Length: 300
Image (cartoon, rainbow, N blue to C red; front, side):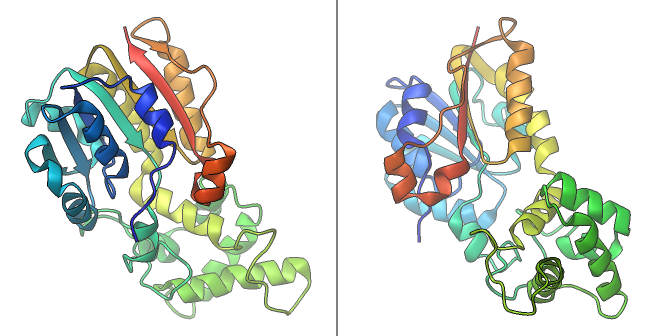
């Protein structure tokens, strides 16, 4: 199943693309945005596509096979944007896109513990085979550290109770798969709701959603990556070039907004004062777009 790109028309219009443009897609994914961008910039336009996940990069290459000679594929984390651009002689780009969301295949088809719908190893590393895993965090962090991660990154109201239960459970058996973690979370919610019945959904959102989100953000250092890459994007843009950022989490959007406000009328000008969001038709056809926010700036 191919991921559906969000706010596609808004991205294409907001980037102000023209024929023969040089464009960077920092989060290539399934290349839905990039495919439309390549159609827009014509046969002589160039695209630099970056993704840290080798599986995503393979999918993107298949989806963009028609544009083989126009695309440079790079397996790397976009936190290294400036180095990547220099290494590939792609300075003075006309447009940069960052879609900070995670595609459906990444969640459901990777077997790395991103999804709580199946019993999978608690890994959650986006790319590569090195670095801290979700298993490491769950089993090695203190109760206070776990509570902070769940509360801050996941905005989980029962963070304290869940952290306490995790610490108690791991003292008996190591928690290294998604199923036992989900059962711990559901147990906390059952006690909170004073019921012993099965509660797969609470208010339309699975109780494990925020915990898994928090762990994923912590493992991949997602917020720090956003902070580091934004100034690099401005630096490598040509004068008049545009940067579009799609965020799906309030913490990410806050970082983007604050950076844009801080640099307004210094190095950039804002294209849309308020973030663009999905219209009713897109929400109907692609429910995952419901939390997407698009902010666009132009380099002065």
